[in-house]
Amino acid sequence: MEQNITTSPVPKSTFAPTVSPRQRVRRQNLEALLFLSPWLLGFLIFTAGPLIASVVLSFMSWDVITPAKWVGLANYKHLFHDPLMYTSLGNTLYYAAFSIPLHLVVALALALLLNQKVRAMGFFRTIFYLPSLTAGVATFLLWGNMFEPQAGLLNRFLRLFISNPPGWLIDPAWSKIALVIMSTWAVGATMLIFLAGLQGIPTHLYEAASIDGAKPWAQFVNVTIPMLSPTIFFNTVILTIGSLQVFTQAFVLTHGGPSNSTLFYVYYLFNRAFVYFNMGYASAMAWLLFAIVLVLTLIQMTMSKRWVHYG
Amino acid sequence: MDKNKQRVQKSFIYLLLIGFSVLFIFPFIWMVGTSLTASGMVLDRARPIIPLHPVWHNYVEALTVLPFGIFLKNTLLISVLSVIGQTLSASLVAFAFARLKFPGRDALFVLVLSTMMLPPQVTMIPTFIMFTIPGWIDSLKPLIIPSFFGGGAFFIFLLRQFFLTIPAELEDAARIDGCSSFGIYRHVIMPLSKPALTAVALFSFIGHWNDFLGPLIYTQSMDKKTLALGLNAFKGLHGTEYNLMMAASVAVLIPIIVIFFFSQKYFVEGVVTSGVKG
Image (cartoon, rainbow over all chains, first blue to last red; front, side):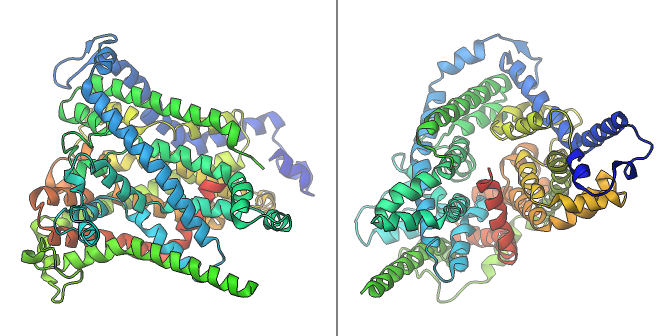
């Protein structure tokens, strides 16, 4: 505001003829506090408070009914010896390892196609984006129906080529892959971010490259990818955080099965908290998840220094 | 020669675009087709994708086996009130970050952004326990009230980015006319930010419409359930009646699809604002 006043042609005195500068600063701070108060209160009540409570809880044993008991590090010790924790973490990392690269490749491919100055670009963009908005129980059920081994669309199609298509959601070897395929259908938001990134690349870079005789593929590798690297990095981080929290699709479609093959980390946490009411144990699980998210994000940030170019 | 090559290239691009479009749209067609299939035909491997004799009655049956009217009422209540809460509170907070000067502003904004990294599972359990104290479990309150407290880091960020693009001259002029900060928020920034506010409102609405984990944790009785939970309950009760399940699912999706087709440019701009300038 200070700046605004000096750039405006009106002398300062017209603004606050009787208010001293110090009073004005105090007034400004109070105003800012009022504007910020919804977030400040929300942060204290719904983030900071629960965060502290969650740390404390992770050192306790509590089933909601009987009084809580301090158990020190027992939850964490138990956690590191819990085979189901490792199963669920393994499932989650497996899901992430397939879904993140697939999302990136499909989203980038669609964005590149939309960026080719085609007619009806808006129409195609709408179609590609729609499934990401509808993602929820309704479309999960839709995919559950498509994955149905006998009369489902996918196997009806596959039987044209192979005689024994997989059982998808009822086959432990395929259940996670089925959920990866389903999630890739909802790639629209990632695609839009890529598209915006592509449109931000100055065209003169391509002109210069093509004068130097660079073929389309060379242009893609030497212009598009480096210029798009901040966007690729952003999408990778967002997709990593999101895929580690995969839950609803498994809850609705497979109940974590068959044979725990879709028991994801957050699903196991949910069971511990809201089925068995091991509130302390589930809190310890939540902190381990947070630690994993932090470590993965930090690794990505460190690696990004090598390949992300900020123009 | 070169022109021909270009034409071949363009055709190839259109071919790919159309191919992908078919892939992306087909699940919806399959869904509608299944929803109109007669019960005896659903597990038939050779049934036509769109039935020759559509059974419209499936929709009546699907939406009456469970109280979908109540689910709709609950979902609308949560979604509409949350839209109001999130748009209002996120815009106030974003205004402070974009337009006001106060000590520690940048550090505080980093704190806002860092809450996006925090998995909601970490705060979920204590928050749940907290809501048991006033006895709000099995009510819609825990699903609505938090929306009025800041509106979430993502929306604050999105609105701040937009508010920053509004020229300062407009604000100066209003201040000269004796406008207070709230006046500027109300009469200058808000009217000029309709596209961003619409994007926030739409994302908020759809987010709450599709939300599953929240209602799953906080509601128990049938008359408190939302559409998403209702669909899940439907699967539990009539797991193999795919035609009815798809009819109910289509009904739940239609409002979202209608909203999307009437306001898609806001969605696109919203995603772009959040992604590129991030």
